Image (cartoon, rainbow, N blue to C red):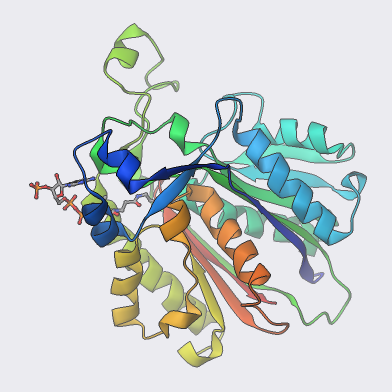
Length: 328
Ligand code: UT7
């Protein structure tokens, strides 16, 4: 097994800001309700011209630049998203082409909010096995195109954005490296978060458009409970599998879902709050993009020192959940 190292990270957030006060003008809600129930203050929206591949490209270019690699060095481009530009071709194909990653394979990965964590595991497998050397992974979403801005249960939560990472084969004995992964799924909970129409189960037509079935539907309370229990399972599993205690973890980067989810988890597992990175107040829930955006920001703010143990945890539609453990 070859060591897998992080060579670069990047993030891109569209400029347009949608505040809670803006949402007060759109649905029956209040800034106070949204703050108290979620911790979100504002989120970003892609411009009319921007699709998921555009957000991805901006984040990817930054990660590639930091890595010091050329686009031709990439062996794969993987985009984790549930809001692709098209059903086909993949969003990754657009990013591969625009970057000039002429030697790379390109494919999308759909594991909803856990997509980036899944991608990091897949990319690590490609590299550690010796099949590939350099892989670009991106978590990117343009959720605003699939959110029903007449549904107060969902429209207050989501935002658009992209985060990227370049992973490479490291030198033998590299201390900064990817250490462990753990991925899970339970398709029995498929209907807790779904876009009901537009796929092969229920093809798009005038009736599906009239019924607003091309937007996300979500059973918020159930998803909340799942988020808390899966995050606890992920932390406990990471500790157990790697013989770590709470004190050994320098930074947890959770999927940015809801401040109350994190609070509930920390009541059960007493990780000091300053070791859990949160930026959901500014960006809301950006699904597959949330973990890599947070990681990039945490690194940029000096929250990660060489040798730190970092745990990325995510959970979401599918249902899916998983973690990656890294030594920075
Ligand atoms: O990445 C995974 C994606 N999913 C998520 O992130 C969702 C996780 N779930 C949550 O974050 C929370 O469940 C929500 C924020 C969605 C909802 O919070 P909650 O504390 O679970 O509220 P609730 O669904 O139990 O609703 C409580 C009340 C209801 O009114 P009644 O029935 O008690 O009269 C809702 O109709 O709050 C009402 N409500 C709202 N009120 C004002 C629901 N949404 C809103 C709103 N503004 N935006």
